Length: 511
Image 1 (cartoon, helix red, strand yellow):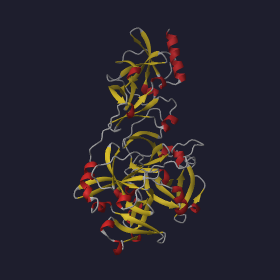
Image 2 (cartoon, rainbow, N blue to C red; image 1 turned 45 degrees about the horizontal axis):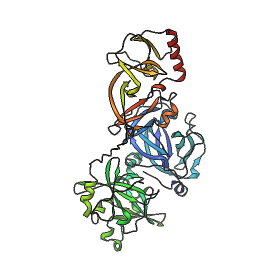
Image 3 (tube, rainbow, N blue to C red; image 1 turned 90 degrees about the vertical axis):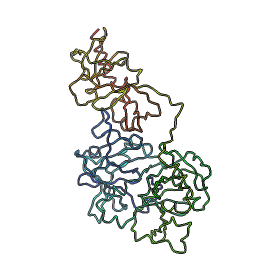
Image 4 (cartoon, one colour; image 1 turned 180 degrees about the vertical axis):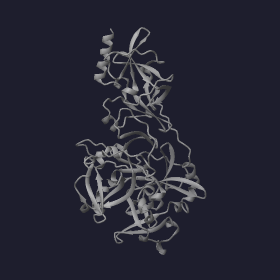
């Protein structure tokens, strides 16, 4: 979900925070930085990373770094439970997922409830203040989202930069579980503007909110309020202009325009439609008693999609509540077949002829799938007799005689600080060239030689580059929509400069 102009809203309505538990303590983070809340996913571990980095996860085809919030704050590690969730934070081009014990909900905190200070000594670096809520009966430690997102000193989110809030499914499901009884009396909506009027759609009907700056492909013989179709994560999504639907003048897309993706069911069919809106405002949680029915004089065929009117700020602010299902009941029904066809499960495969491919040799190390470019691999051999070398570095197992050439051998499990295990007939030695000399790397097993397009390779997440002493990860290759991720290693960066010198010293001693 996306929050726009949240700084201005914070001044009027207080600071909007998503709150959660770590043990008995309650913490809060500014909602401007919240993208979504998800269940704890399976992760791909990354070697030589701090203990608080759990690994990489697949978030709808993109790579997300998962961080243990307890360990990041210096708290005691705890096992995940059914209530554990990942809070996905984003700002600028940074995105991280933090595992928390339990999500509580979204609250509004006024400035006079906040005291500057810190919580426990271990978490002090991340706590920017403490809020006293419910007349001081509860304390909420407010975390600095920019520090959690690993912004460096002096680095800030650019003014006006996008604070992405995509895919808000689950905010209702994951928030305020302790107030479940009250939820039946409340309504949660995403509010947005069309022209000067404010509208809202229930959170449960919204799949995600996306920024779109590309071109919409027109569909022949459709009503004017259907702008056309776009490709969203390789699926075709029909776009409906609410301005045209409401007989208003159309305006061009700008940086504030958003597409609200909603799923609509009618007569056994399910449609996914993008509703183009001018500006997304906020998440509203209101009492149902604040929703008034549409006055009889306003009821008409052309307005039956409005299910109620919400009165806020003592009636000075009106929000028209839209029922997406009723959008199909009159004007859109004539286009149902078009929307069903365009919005089905068929995938639009886009092939870039310029997307060059490279071959990789993939292998396993403690269950982690890694790979080298095939041009960096000289050969792959079965384990042979390894001769120990006195006073060799810890990461060097010894040397082997490879057809008359003495080759030092490194166990990648040891090098990456992973658990050591007895070797078996699946182990292999991958011969590569480091600083001009042949070197053997012991891996658990070699999987395959495969091709990957450059578009399938993502840069190493920034937090990993900051935390890893040796920047040996070139990137992450994604396969099967990122259900399979392979860590691409740089042969030259597997060893640090100091380790390379130590390796050369072995060579000189052998000579």
